[in-house]
Amino acid sequence: MTASQTTFRTTVTQWFKGLQDRICRALEDTDGKATFVEDEWERPGGGGGRTRIIAGGNILEKGGVGFSAVYGKTPGKILSALQLGEADFYATGVSIVMHPQNPMVPVIHMNVRYFEMSSGVSWFGGGIDLTPHYVDETDARYFHSRMKETCDQHHPSFYPRFKKWADDYFFIRHRQETRGIGGIFFDRLSADDTFSLEDRFRFVQDVGESFAPVYTHFMRKNHALPFGEIEKEWQMVRRGRYVEFNLVYDKGTKFGLDTDGRTESILMSMPPQAQWHYNYFIQPGSREDYTLQLLKKGIDWV
Image (tube, rainbow, N blue to C red):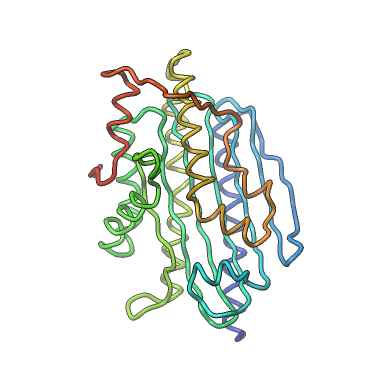
């Protein structure tokens, strides 16, 4: 590895650590009650991270903001999945999931990451997606507009491309429904004839910095909205769908487990409670039914 490559890796890693700090402060300030508890850990194969968990807040029931920087021998399963030759890997990034108290506040997920191999292969990946328990069209349009603004600063093709990618990725095939209203998702963004790796990094930085203002907006706007037992039960059912996706389809979960990552940190995205009802019935014409009608690919929110 050249000196410039080492410097770039260090710059990216330190920026991700700073992003974790900034997001945690913004969430604590907005919640007004709970604070993050930090758990530093080391990976036996190389590297480690800082997992920060918030719980029992005014707005946030449970959430995690994790930073990691891990490295070592790349498992054969990963090499096969990525269709790459044998080489050591280095991966760093920030991953976030927030589960609110009030069903009217949406769940949000963000991941921004950098991956490189000793063979010289390197890329960025990540994205942000929103999972409302009840879809509010105004909120959906606001969220997608903000994602589009971020993407448009870098290239007009990014939002439509990454929005479709999110629709396809965050799809629960065995339920034939999307996990939420999508957002943006991208992976393996490497240097090419149009974008340098530094260009890719600047895009990922803007995605990362968009998280706190977008989600704290929803926290402030929706946390005092009324709800009852029906809405709370629906929240538990939707959390169950979230768990299904993360355990069956999520590539980050699989990568972490396949590289002998720290299980507690990998599974921090799980909600504190969830429910599965056999043959769950949705009342036609209900708000729950309305939400299900909008958990589909290809909806144009902007």
